[in-house]
Image 1 (spheres, rainbow, N blue to C red):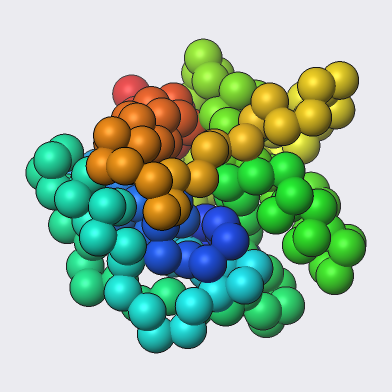
Image 2 (image 1 turned 180 degrees about the vertical axis):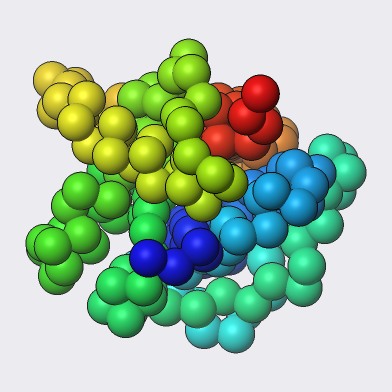
Length: 191
């Protein structure tokens, strides 16, 4: 088994929410030290705007948090990208469902961002030699705990695209909180 662990974050166009989450996760991983080097993060959109830069509101919200977007360029999600991912995190249940309609074998590793954070939040760091091994254990745990909530859309991250700057900042704050929750057990070094 490879020591690399690949996370793909997905939204609609890959110019707003998923690039923010990608940048936040990458920022946290860089701060996580050499143990986190085996975790790779990227993003894509179910209707990706191929080659487009991050939305100005998203870039502004990231800058306000002291996070760079690393010159993001949008891309469309493909079955190859999903197939290569160890964890797929979507911004909406509809994105997750679209992925699973085309790639049902990805079910055990495809979650909404908020769903995954809820399922692993408060989890003690799993045992494993390195962040990639801990990440694999977290995905297994999350899949075993998964239940369908009776309220559709509860795990969605609202799309601020086209709205006021406050919406982008609120979206970034929501994503940052969820990213912190899901990365906490991954980045805690083993004693």
